[in-house]
Image 1: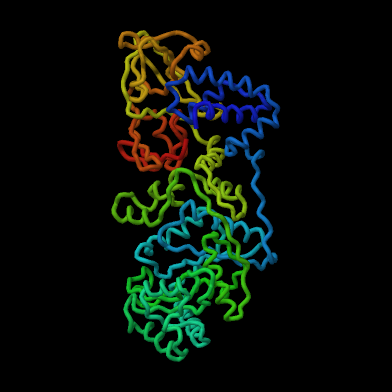
Image 2 (image 1 turned 180 degrees about the horizontal axis):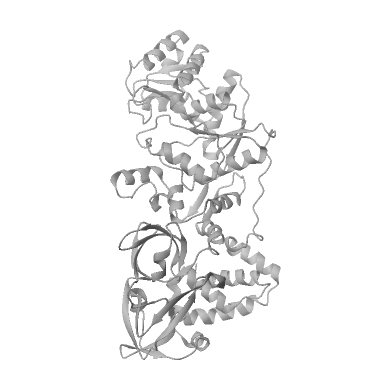
Length: 564
């Protein structure tokens, strides 16, 4: 997005907020606060903003709203961008709806998992029903292994999201005997058979629609082979149990799919008690019936699994729950992979499952993202099969609405560089803790001639240009020296090059580290008042970002980056 587009979207937002009349100064402040990299271009931005604001202020209010909806819907106020109501569920009776969340414990829930979880929760609340948490811990592949910590992290994340799931958590690893019972029933009905073909042979048979030679074995013979599998007579990869489907099915992947396979890996909960494990769609088919699930919400990438479930229900003559498929929700610029996160956590590259790079619910909570913001963000898209791609800023916008009023403002100077401003007067600067709530009070700074500014700001100071320390004083760079300038702020806005945050060089400043969302750690100094903050407080470091105080150490404070 170029500078013109950035200015325009914030100008449209400001105009809509104030009945069609944007304020250029407010727009400039917003642009620079959200895009600090543009600060060196203040002069050009001020001129461009003035021109854009003049044009927008001549527009009809409805036209302003329409254009903002088109270019930056995430900036619309909540009253302008109302949530899409959840559609009625088919065959839903008040008090009788039973739904389930069945996460695979290869890691904690992340932002991507939050969508089906919240949709299930909202529908259960809507109909006064019941929500089951089923830990889907059938043993996975080598690439997607079970993670012991996930068994606690998943319900922890759901509680943080304020989800009302049933207090009794169901573990599929406790239900192997049930799955074995129904596997035997399928075999006796001649609907499943033990197969000893290689993966390559099966693939060729599927492609050509050729029946496996083991498919013709009698039910009694298959039952014997099945019992050998359960008793551990076969090793991993030597035998599987397959479902008999039509070998002329239009989708080759549906032909004779695997129901059970052998795994000799240790399970986090039951060790090596079992060696034969069901595939997910088989366990779903059995559990959805036995647990009385009435409605299932799942991603549309699982339509094959839904078809498998229906096939099995038809064999047993069981009624089908209502199956609802949703499109994938993608976040621009965010790469989420539990398998990658698991490798990085195990290798010590990530600090743990709450490392910001995992995008787990635990990491979002640690950053200061509110569960209400995630819920509002998810529900704004409703229930649809359409794939949705949105910028992560849309989530941040929801969170900003919740924290902006409560977050006090402070100065943080990254990589501080000391400068001396000649002829600067001694003064007491009073800066509000919040620009909109004077009752919150002020911070006071006793200033002289020595100040800290960020090394990045320092490197961009140019000869003969005018600069301003925010809400303090102006200065010029002349012959590699810094000289106080008494020009007032209004005139500075016309002629000045750059506004920067600062700290006085004095005793008691606080060493600060900020853990960023990409794992980088930014270091610098913060004002003395931050020492009084409580752990968990979300504040705004002016012209930097919203941050949450994560830890107080003897010699420093550690914050986590929330968002701009």
